[in-house]
Each structure stands twice: as structure tokens, then as C-alpha cells.
Amino acid sequence: MKRFDIIPDFLGIGANRSGSTWLWRNLKEHPDIWMPPKKEIHYFDRSRIYPSPSHLASKHFLSRLLGREAHNVAYRKKFLHDLISSGYHYKWKGIRWTLRYYLGTYDDDWYLSLFREGMGKVKGEITPSYSILDYKDVEQIKCLMPNLKIIFIIRNPIDRAWSQIRYASSRGIFKGISLVEMKKFVDDPNQVLRGDYIRTINIWRTCFSKEQIFIGFYDEISRSPENLLRNIFEFIGVDTVKFTDKIYNRINTSPDKEIPEKLKFDLAEKYYEQIKQVSNMLGGDAESWLKQAEKILENNYE
Image 1 (tube, rainbow, N blue to C red):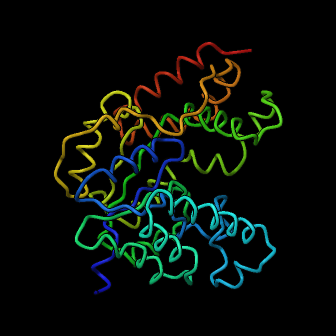
Image 2: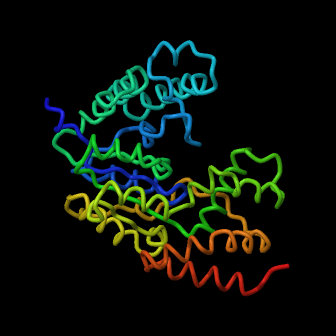
């Protein structure tokens, strides 16, 4: 087995709360595509400088097994959970992959080994937190996988932020759901970074050619999921197959709740310049986002 035989062909980089689990499950259905049993590998964002899961921060197994640091405690909890889950859903193959994922020494060779079962197929992974990577880490990805294709699905930043708030609330991250708490949450540097599409696009386009980056709109998942998947299949180089009803199933949706008018105004104000730049750069659904934001701001909520 040669190294280039197991190099991933594509990488999904987000955005967060923008249909990445839907995409992962539908790509897995394609007979010519191989995806890891674990959706988010978190290899390139494992550094603790990033506001994302850092359970892979310790390179060596003994540190992860015995360390008292929060990220090592999280590692042990995830290891047990995923081992049980992989055995239930994927049987022995899943257990074997999970052991390789959790027991290895985290380096580039280890990362590539996670894709060896995908030899002969188009293979890749989706980790939305890769959208917040700094230039140096994206450059590392380019050096390791120069022919990689990048998939970036973006969502109206106002809707994305509200979805993140509802999701966090449903998981008990908030003690309450006051407007003050919600504002504090969206102003957190973590959330600001995840909604900065221009930063993400500029960094990845600096390292990869435009032809290597597919930018899609979350809106298409509701409007025309078949068309979105066809375009992605063509982009990564596989034939279109007959779609199943799974393409209409939305996954990890946040509990339905109407966004408060004051918060909607604040988010429109916060993201207006970002939306305007995305609209100018990409057009498409982003033009509708801009019109929506302008309409919200016209009301001048007091």
C-alpha cells in the first residue's frame, strides 16, 4: 500500500450549523464514496489555540490515558462512547477503526491511515471546525494533500447564529435563555470566528486554487437537495446515483423557536458588512441574505 493510495480526495470544512451532518450521511450512501464512521476527525484543529474540541491535543497515548487536563478527560469519555457506538453500528470494522483513531500517535501518517479502508474509492471527511483554521494549518493541509478538493457550505449568518443559540440552549449550555445571554453567546470570539466566511474563504483560497474549492448554500438543502448533491458529486468526481428519501431528512435541527425581534435586529447589524461582502463575492443566495438584512435594519428596532 502506497501513501498516495490513502490520501483523502476531499474535505468538508463547514460551516458550523450549515448541514454538515446531512452532507456526511448522504455522501456515505454513494457506492463510490468512502467516509470514516466518525463524522468529525478534528485532526487539523486539535491544537488548544482553537475554540473547538481538543481531545486530540495530546500526541501520545499515555498522556491521553493518564492526563488530568480537561482535554484528556474529554478524550477518555469520547473514547468509551465511540467504542460502544461503533460496535453497535459498524461491528468489528467500526471497532477496529475506532481503536486506530483513539490509540494512535497523532501525526500525518496516523491521519492518512484512517482512510485505508477507502482505497479504490473517493474518500474524505467533514469537520466543520476546519473553517476556523489559521493560514499555517491550512498550508499544512495543502502540503500533505495538494490535490485536495474543499467543500464549504455556508448559511445566512443571522440564521446560523440563531440555530447555534437554540442548539446550545437545548444542550443545557445556557442557564436560561435571556436576551443578554444570547447576545453574550454570539459575541463570543468562538462564534464570531465561525461566522466569518470571508476570512475562511480568503485563507483557503490563498492555499488552494478556486477550482479546488466548492462553495454551496445551505438554502439549497431545503430548496433543491438533489441539485446540491449533484453539483457536489460532479465536483469530487463521482457519478450521480438515484437519490433516497434521506436527502429530505434534516439532521441535528435545533428546536423550533421564533427569533426575538431585538436579537434579529442586533444580528442583522452585527453581520451586515459580512453579508454584504459575501453577496458581492459569491452572489446567489447571499444576495437574498443581504436584502433580508437590509429589511430588518430598515425597521430600526428600539
